[in-house]
Length: 461
Ligand code: C2E
Ligand code: CA
Image 1 (spheres, rainbow, N blue to C red):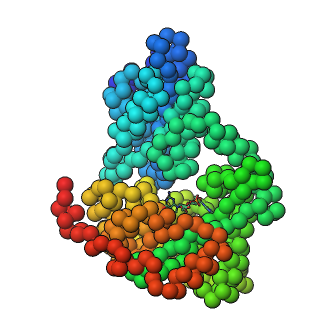
Image 2: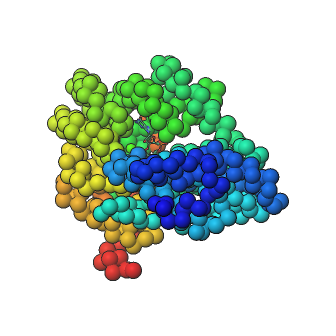
Image 3: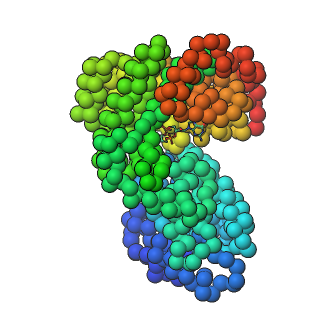
């Protein structure tokens, strides 16, 4: 009997990727069409379906690594299984497969690209929501990629690439576009050139101001790396940072960014502006004592107000080492911020143990604050908790005045996002600091409406 009720029957002619197994994880695998299985189904549909064009949609679980690290592989498999079952109920004609640990894909026919996109988005929205894993509740979020109506053999790959694009841009849905496909393939093949780029100064940094919501002034910056390839143009940081993590180039890259941040901080100081600079510290490096030693040496040689941003996943991988390293950094005057909080499974237990003095609420949580009373209540509780633990709270990805007002009303201390300022080169930051020494440009009480009534939100449905 299938773990997922009649899920076994949803797929196919049996034989594609079936393994008979008694243990849980293998049983989960056994009930899915796999990637080659779906490819065969696509060709079958192309040969035997009606005349409507054929599409493939891919749905990827957000923050998969984090959920897996905390809840375990089998829990993720369970989640993906339930999603597949729901998808089958919503779209009985779709041929559905699990094409990797965290991605479902479905082949279907639609009248045109518009209908395919509408149905993919409806399916994505229908699959999102809370799921229980043991005693915990996980807020499942998905990104989706949709193929164009191209040759059948290319559809699954196109959907997969479009999903990668959606994830890289933190978008909810992307439709395959041949031009960005060329760019994506290009950036992957560029990876061997990253080390040369580091050595030859092809990289540069930009700084995104953080705004104190009470004083309305810039209170720090996040330094972000950029790479403009001489022939191929800008390469997405999400893409090359991720690949640098895989190839081991992340150490050299982070060293370069950190040195550059300290250099530019010194230039800003020479202009008369002292400001904390935050640099992202990749998960792989948080548990790496030698790397932390290097940061501490650098900091001792070049004093400056340097902060580090780490995600919770970084700590989950090697908790004891990471806690110790974060405490060492804090003791040496480089405190950490917890980055992307609320974007997946956020663990209160870790929050208590990390020596961080700042919590950055992820854009996905912030985006929902204005739309959902539940998210507003969750955000308010996280803010209270963080304050209780002595942390300041940063609202990330604030894009408009209404959201800025909401997060200020919910008690966030600092705002970051396109509404306040986009990431900018040093020269522009110097100008922004000059302008900021006049009357406050973004003072909450002067510009924004009344803080939101949290009591009313609490009583809302
Ligand atoms: P992150 O640490 O979450 O950085 C914030 C990202 O959100 C930046 O994207 C920033 O440009 C973008 N952002 C800021 N405000 C808004 C907004 O209002 N709306 C939207 N849609 N986006 C906003 P960016 O620069 O593309 O960086 C993406 C990710 O790449 C970063 O996410 C970080 O994880 C990684 N990254 C960037 N630079 C470095 C680095 O030097 N080292 C490491 N390890 N990772 C880096
Ligand atoms: Ca960050």
